[in-house]
Image (cartoon, rainbow, N blue to C red; front, side):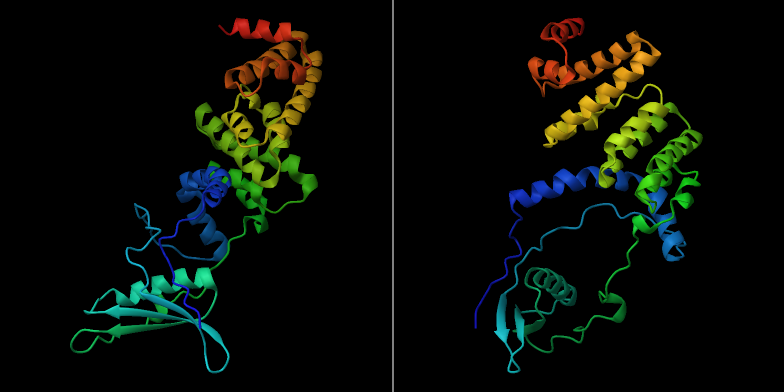
Length: 314
């Protein structure tokens, strides 16, 4: 018999935290901002739920519980089955004891993945009380799944709510239809957005979400083609991506984007093409993520040209 005590105050490692923050937070922020506009209607549409009313609960649920489990043992029962035995000592009746034990159960089962037998040893006087079993409505019995990758994108593209429209990028369509879906999203956003600022906001969110489907470059290209005044190289995400360890991939993306920009510039006029090059160089100079020599190399410019652009920024 071994005695692995359960420490509920044990914090996740720094690497675990960083991993969750670097990927999840940027998407979580979008979904939390848009939650009421998209998920209540989407849940009702896709899962058939009928919600009469709802209100958000303000505040966070604590990730730790104030007191630790008193005793937790790993035991082997007489039938050979391995289980956990959880023991709590109580000197007084606690009306929340049942729910505290339920919290302990979830925490311990998540860590050890073994059946758990819970036991309260009451040290007080009289009877402990009858409240020992959760009601059916209080039991955790699993969860439903709303898989956006299985949703018909046409239903989302018909929405008058921009938060719903951008979710079409995460819906169910074949790879060859990706450019058409992206263009349809942008067209619908132009129809339903009430201001240029609103359109810019949802275009930025669309660019963020495109990373979930590895479509960032294609999305940026189509956005640039279909919108005026939107420069993907000046987007805050672009600079953050460099900081998050995507330098190599983004450098290739810059080279590809520059090549396409120059080709477009030759068609529409050398002056416009050079302006796009200078804007991209200025963005990287401001970010200080690359040296002047590196910028010159990536854009196939001379160091003198890069320094000239830098001087113009003063």
